[in-house]
Length: 229
Image 1 (cartoon, rainbow, N blue to C red):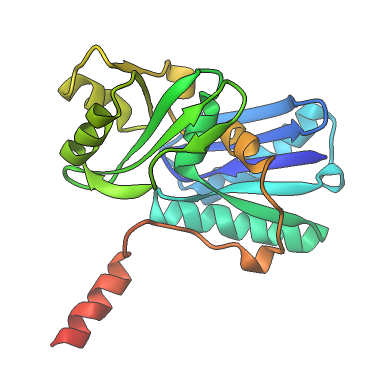
Image 2: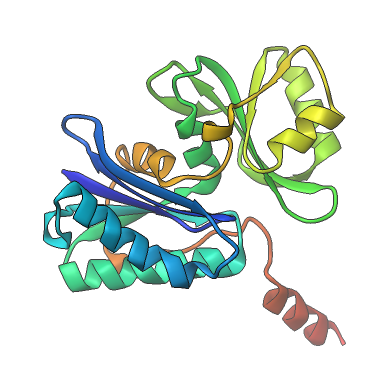
């Protein structure tokens, strides 16, 4: 099956085409952009298909980053995937952004920690174990302080590869011989990791696709505050 991956969860907009039978990426396109993802993601998909000699009708399913990450970016990605799936009459799956990051570094055997900046001293984090071919969760993905994450990793007692847009700062501030940092090509969110994670997941109808922020969005917080008055 030809699986398309889309990631609009962070500063990068990314799309990829993955042949799940041959395990070959036919195309990938990633752009670190200051533009709104709605301006770049669909043109990126179109250009990627042209470059690979494929059409939308060749795509058998779509995997998309469902969060955590940018509120606006995630909504744009989910809306684009739903529109594509409804139009093509195909199914999709949502993939954790943190899991996708870990899968981008899946060749590294051992412990992988994905870190995405949230606000202040808070980060979204997930810890995984890789055997070089697949990953498994060690901890639940959560919104935690950096000190809490450092304590969790220290208790693990093993070397940890850090990835995600919060990895560089964490590596610098909590420098330890037990910590290494992913190379630039594996450090930020990208659709290749989303494809690798999505390839092992069940595809569902697009109306079931939901984003996951791992925290309450501003509208929910404002509503709670009004209800308490």
